[in-house]
Amino acid sequence: MLFVPVVDKNQKPLMPTTPARARKWVKSGKATYFWKRGVYCVRLNVDPSDNKVQPIAVGIDPGSKREGFTVKSELHTYLNVQTHAVTWVKDHLKTRRIMRRSRRNRKTPYRKNRTNRLTNKKRIPPSTRSRWLWKLRISNWLLKLFPISTFVVEDIKAKTKKKCRKWNKSFSPLEVGKSWFYAELSKLGKVELKLGFETKELRDSLGLKKSKSKLSEEFEAHCVDSWVLANWYVGGHIKPDNTNLMVIIPLEFHRRELHRLKHSKGGKRPKYGGTISMGLKRGSLVKHRELGLTYVGGSSNNRVSLHDLATGVRITTRAKLEDIKFLTYNSWRTALPPR
Image (cartoon, rainbow, N blue to C red; front, side):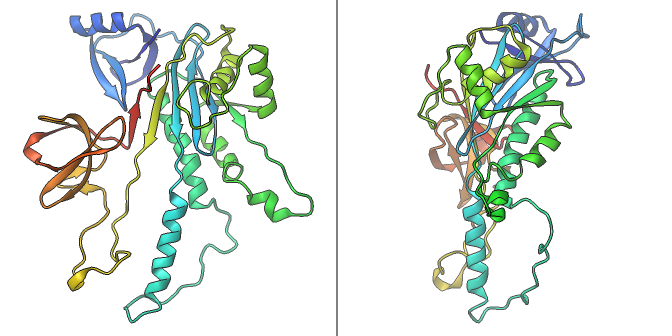
């Protein structure tokens, strides 16, 4: 059974309710509905009759390509989310480095090369930081919808090599930076860690199996582990009561490029990159007069590109501003895979 997140007049999360009761509240004026990044929610217009909340845990199953999140209490599983990881930062940094070095090898005005100011400084590489920051963003989003008290994370451990200190410290993008993530996550709530073999033992004790197809959009791919982790903390079930899945794909925005990768004819530099298209922020959820619900892409010749929410495919490049109604800002798209 699906549930609807509920917040009070001060945006404080309360216990979720059933869709039928949420519709009744909205119809009577007791509540107002709104969308929060693809999730239907209601906001109470009156003081709640009871502020008591049950313990709710979020199980997190990290991964290199896909990740699982489950929001669960003792009685119900409220939400299962499978997210696509942020994987493009490393390639962007490599391209930027190549372009910068190529400009210094030709007769182009440029600043003098500075010494590396990051030498001997403890920091997380940008590509690794973006991966863990994405998990933190999802956790913050869930915290605004549900009264979450605990996060249960599968602690990543990988094989180490003898007599190889450098490899042991920075061999995996999932291993590096996890301490930073745990520290930031502990500011949001209590954090519990479970090793991989402990998650497998919990899964086997319940008779659940994990799919070998890691990239498939199904509950058994990643959310089965996140559900097991959340159920370990709050208890209440011996098998999943809700296997509905929501898929979240982060939108990739391109920075404004001063020099394109290829020379343009006539020396005229066309606009590329940035996050604003004809006054609309890219990724924003909009409603087109004919195309319906879409999100904003790039722009060209005083026209805006619109993309499909489910697939991300560009629908049109010729949308006019007067035909578009802005709904809300958005930095990821959601999809509901067929059951």
